Length: 88
Image (cartoon, rainbow, N blue to C red):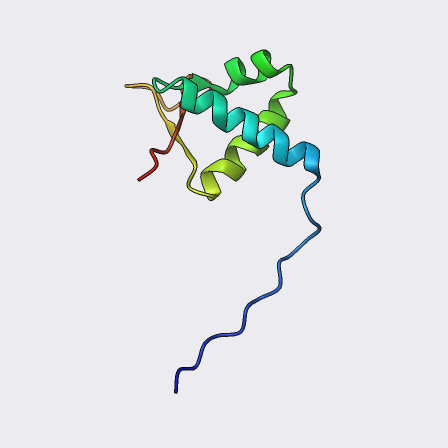
């Protein structure tokens, strides 16, 4: 007999369709630019507030769809590039 842990209910409210679409567009941009894009470049291209861009990138990172790469010799977030995680 196999015992499985009960599924925890998702916390919080469901994401609005606008947020899901924004994340999808940012991920598509990252996939189209394999050398990476800065957060500010993404915000400017999509005409988004920097905080909304950062939140979208963080959601993609937590889902293992994107990752941040610091520029060599720099730890400043403004110099970081974001790239899409390669699909297997």
